[in-house]
Amino acid sequence: MFTHIMIGSNDLEQARGFYDATFAALGGQPGEMDARGRLIYSHEGGRLMITKPIDGKPATAANGGTIGIAAASREHVLAWHRAGLAHGGTAIESPPVERPNGSFVAYLRDPTGNKLTVRTPPAQ
Image (cartoon, rainbow, N blue to C red; front, side, top):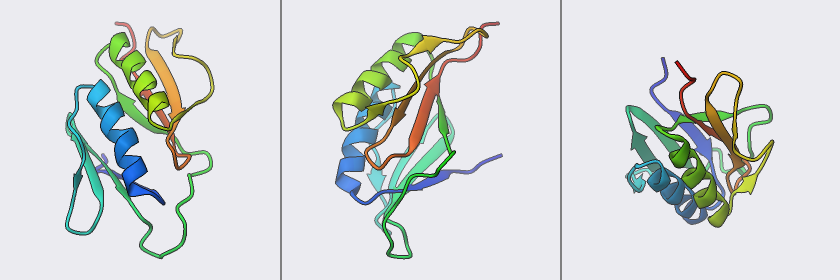
């Protein structure tokens, strides 16, 4: 359904440190800066793009928005959470936890305040 998700940042180098670390924890590659000055992360068919807002106004986090990222294992979720905390992220909601459906999930806010979650698939 989606081709990509684009979020704003006021500090692309700070965003690069956070997202490079969290995507590495999931087995992904560091982001690449495109010709338009956007950081692009491609992983398992999805793309996350981070940019300074084109209207010149400060980036703000979406109120009520959450970006969900798939993880292959509980260990990946825990590594993602640790990497995010070590690179300017803030733990939110609950510590990493198993949900009633068997998925394992963690939540963070990135340095700009965007809400992210990483989770394993539900138990079969």
